[in-house]
Length: 157
Image 1 (cartoon, rainbow, N blue to C red):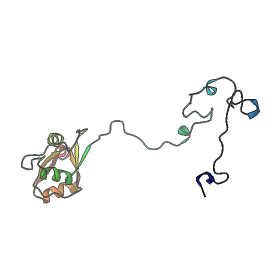
Image 2 (image 1 turned 135 degrees about the horizontal axis):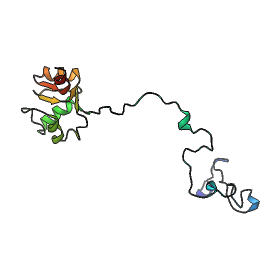
Image 3 (image 1 turned 60 degrees about the horizontal axis):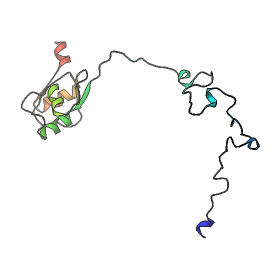
Image 4 (image 1 turned 180 degrees about the vertical axis):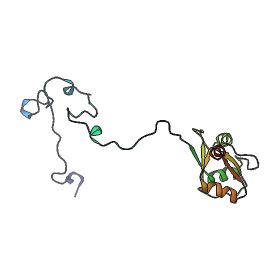
């Protein structure tokens, strides 16, 4: 067998219909696009328009409710805080505030506050003050000998 003997399987490659190549082709003159109008021109796509039929995005059911004024918190895990303390980017001896977390580069921006979650281990004695924290995160910090104060707990008192 030589290179020039190689052939595709019969029926594997279908020749494309050549549009607008004379009346004998069956797709000559207007190329199957009809007469005039927006859809006969090139470079036009009417997105989500289904020819008067109800479009798919309107046929699908809408569920639930998106609260327009919901709070969005920046999330930090305890394991990451511990890693930043070990790397010397955060000072474990002083109080770790939201501003300190942003300054260290652990959090990009505060959004509506910073919430601490309990993923990862914490061994340093930390004194953290943030907007919110999970119960397990508070327990983990206190178990390591530190304290985790939240703005929500202060508001409740």
